[in-house]
Image 1 (tube, rainbow, N blue to C red):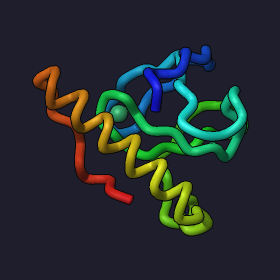
Image 2: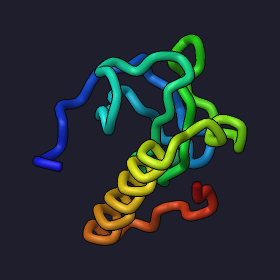
Image 3: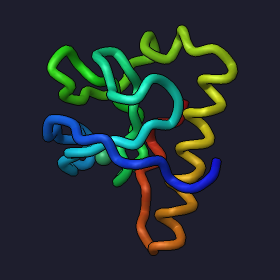
Image 4: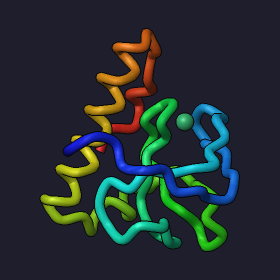
Length: 100
Ligand SMILES: [Zn+2]
């Protein structure tokens, strides 16, 4: 990865785990703007989330992750690892209760 990709504005949405409000996303892999059904990760707590039809966020269920191939799973794991490291460097405690 060469630096952090630019932020993409999204409708404000609240993380169901930590209550943080997101109004932007960063593409990890895919097609640019998030679409319903796309996975995302809360930057605050690391919870894996899914964009709903209105691009709100809900917690990912096992069925949301079941169809991931090994590359997609690795990308999600790498993103979570990046967040853990980022939060550690900034003295923050990420939520680790939602592993893949
Ligand atoms: Zn969160």
